[in-house]
Length: 93
Image (cartoon, rainbow, N blue to C red; front, side, top):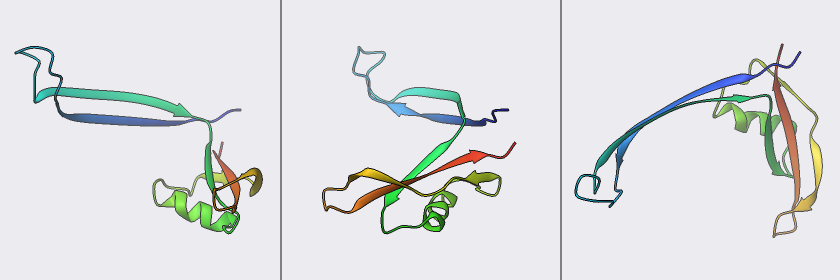
């Protein structure tokens, strides 16, 4: 069974379109969106651990209901030469 997160986002504001006299500056807008995610990848440097990647993700979302995959090394490196790693997080069924 595949489990998904559903994220809902709302954004209201003003924007400058510069189309004509009616739609020039300070035009009101409103956006509402829903997105489904089946997993999240968190990337980091080879100096990080699975624990530090989980801690970083926890700064943005609640990770208590996520299963964490193993720390995977990437064949890529940053410009500094430091290697890259990643970790996948999936919702618990």
